Structures are given as C-alpha cells and as structure tokens.
Image (cartoon, rainbow, N blue to C red):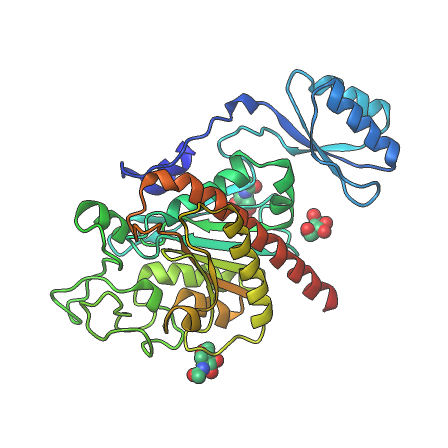
Length: 391
Ligand SMILES: *[C@@H]1O[C@H](CO)[C@@H](O)[C@H](O)[C@H]1NC(C)=O
Ligand SMILES: *[C@@H]1O[C@H](CO)[C@@H](O)[C@H](O)[C@H]1NC(C)=O
Ligand SMILES: *[C@@H]1O[C@H](CO)[C@@H](O)[C@H](O)[C@H]1NC(C)=O
C-alpha cells in the first residue's frame, strides 16, 4: 500500500492507510492452464496437495482455463508434471509481488488549478486492449473534506492488485478498472493546512470574485447546470462555478468518461457521509433503466448492511433527489446522461462524526465497502453481458 500512498498523496503526512506485506509472494507466478477434461482438473488438484500449488481459479474443461499460483521453488516440478500430462499452460502474472505488476498503469491526467498532479490507475489483465470488457470507474475526494473516501479507493486497488483473493479473480479477469483516488488535491491539501471542513476546489477567478476561492466540483458538471441545489454566491459551499467545467479537476473526470464511454458500465463517485447509494437525476426524473439502477444499488446497500457495525445506519438507496436532496451539475448525473448505465453517488458512513470519521473506522469502511463494490461489479457485469449478447 505504501507505494500508492506515495503516488497519490505525496507529502501529506496525515493519511492513514494500513500497509500490507505481501513480499512473501515475491517470485510467485500465476499461470493459465487449459483443461481438456476432468482428469486434467485432477492433475491440478494433486499438484495442490503435493506441491503447494494455489488454485486461483478452478476452471472448467474446454470452456474456462484454470489459474494456478506457483512458488519459485516448485515451478520446475509443476511444469514437468503439466508437460508430462500434455497440458498447455502460459504465464498469466510473472511475479505476484511486484510493486508495479504488468496489469497496472499509472496515468497522470494533468494538473489541478494549483498545479498538483492528478492521477489515476488503470488496472487490467489485458492493458485495456480487450474492448469487450466493461470498465468500472471510481473516484473519491471530489469534495475536499470527505477524507474517508480516498482510503476506499486505495483499498480497492490493494484488493485488486496486492491482495487478490481467489474468490475475486473474476473481478480482475472480467473487468477493467479506472480508479482516481483524489479528484481534488488542492482542496484536500487545504483541509490539512487551513480549514478542515473545506469542500470545494481552490480555483481563483478574480473577475468572478476577488474574495472567494473554489467551486463545488460536484455541481460543476455540464448537466442541468446551475438550476437546482446551488447558490449563485461565489462564497457559498454549493456555488457551481461561473460556467460548466470551469474547473480542471471536473474536466479530467469528464474526459475519462467521454474517452471510455463505450465501455464504462459503472461509475461510482464516492462521497461521505450518510450511508446512501444514489442515482439520477437530481431533478427527480428517473433514467430509463431505473429498475436496474435500483437493483444494483440496493444489492450494494444490502451487502454493506449485512457487514456494518451496529452503530452504523442502514444504507438508503434511491433517486438522489427523492431520498436526499435536489441537485444539478453532479458527477452522477453527468455520467448517467452521457451514457454510463450505472452511475452512482456513494455516501459512506459517518457514525455520527460527519466528515470527521476517526481513523479507527477506516478498516471497517474499507472492508464493507469493498464487498459492496464487488457486488456492483458482478451485477453490472451480468447486465453488460446480457446487453452485448442481445445486440
Ligand atoms: C499498455 O499499452 C500502452 C499503449 O496503449 C503502452 O504504452 C503501455 O506500456 C502498456 N502497458 C503495459 C503494462 O503493457
Ligand atoms: C476479451 O474479453 C472477453 C470477456 O472477458 C473474453 O471472453 C475474450 O476471450 C477476451 N478476448 C481476448 C482476445 O482475450
Ligand atoms: C431532468 O434531467 C434529465 C437529464 O438532463 C432530463 O432528461 C429531464 O428532462 C429533466 N427533467 C425535468 C423535469 O426537467
């Protein structure tokens, strides 16, 4: 995890991320194995008990390859056994513990208003080259003070890259991921240096206001801009900006959405706090696939509810206006309007602390939210497959 901390948070000292040690897997490799029959599977089961081979994916004869993780010590012997049985195999991940595995690409999208680098990770077993895979896009800390959102993205990266469990292998194999842990670094830094509860960006447009800085990035998108749940006062928390996409930070999110729109199946815009999974539109009009949006959102809420702490509220799921409040220019609405089938605002729990969630809750939020994210990834993948098989 430390590597991501350095990449995304730079010199900030206050961030609390649990670090993970998986250098014990240094040199371990993962291999795909073609299965012709049940007896090939049995060869793998035997390797599992005899040579400590970890079966990442059991596979199915002639339809799905198996995946095995092999230690450096046992590799030659495992290959000998596969070859002796005429079983075809290939390298899938050359080194599991490598800090920059070949399926992770760090993208520097550009600078914030104040010149900080804004970055995201692309995670893909096929380097985004397989256009038939859907993309899961998530971002966090669009609102500066919502600190607890960034750890969820880092933990997601951790679970996909550094600590992928066998039962989650489908998430990496079937789906490409784009994860932007900090949309609004200027505001985030400002909450550390000056004002803990700052929400907006830190742009300065003296022709608009000589005294007030920043805009509400989550009202700055070009969708029903400046119509609902906004203030025209440039000093207000919910000032949407003098024009849509006045902020470089929201333009970067827009550019990702538009660049990959054919494949982005789900967009999770992560906020805090209140335990909500919300979908469009902020003016109460429901998107045409509202039933599916509700299905996937409710499955997420239910999954997290089953894992939550007793003191946490239950998740509420629904149209953002009907269950929370009216809004315009939101990332959620923009994603929906440009064609993301499943575009959500996620509001993480606050446990009564609002934006000041104590660090000891981070592990819980990370773990439960990851399970919710996995549910949305799988369900939205099924919808993606169903749609593509019909057309
Ligand atoms: C992925 O593809 C891009 C070109 O689209 C290339 O620059 C990059 O090196 C590739 N990354 C990996 C990990 O293969
Ligand atoms: C692309 O991904 C799809 C869906 O996961 C898979 O069925 C297909 O085999 C992949 N194509 C290639 C060339 O790897
Ligand atoms: C609400 O916004 C959506 C998306 O822009 C639009 O299609 C719909 O017509 C709007 N509804 C109303 C009542 O203005």
